Image (cartoon, rainbow, N blue to C red):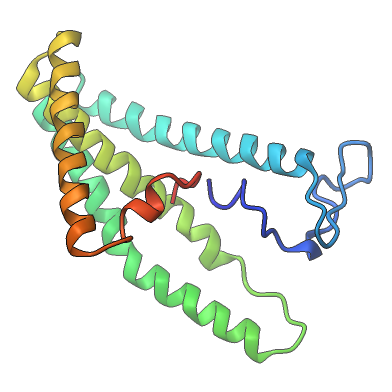
Amino acid sequence: MYGAVKADVDPKVGILFGNGSDFSPKISEGDLSWKATASSCILQLLLWVSAWGMVDCSVWAAAPAQPWMRLTLYFFIAVAGGLMVPPLLRAQREREIAAASVHGSSPAVGPMLAGFPVAVALASGLWGVIDSAVEMFSGSETGSQFKAYLVIVVASGLGTALHHKLWPHQVIDNLGQVSLV
């Protein structure tokens, strides 16, 4: 989840909660406080779930009884997110180069923060496309939708196995990571 549970956190982060109270773990070389990790996970989950929920509410408000229209809206949300990836990657690369070239400078956070809405648009848009397609083809009955999702999971699993045979370690190495993007 945006690195919230990675063990290689920068030890220079220092106090994460601000005022030095009991809820302010200090991170030192080799000692990552569980409080810092847990708070980061919780905050990121809240951000992800609420942002994703806003996208879903907006789409459902625009097309409450029309799965094909929701599919279309989610598709455009995913495309908008996808179109923002190249300029975002360019800005993030420039940020890293600028930070490395100026000794002791703090890199700009704007390009990193801009990655969040792009990731939300991609994830919620693609998820919504799949959900809407399943509803269009299988109806609103839960059992039929479960079977449709099962077909997608099996087909994706077979596709992953084939992909791994042709291009080893590109999908399977990342599949089990605790990370959203």
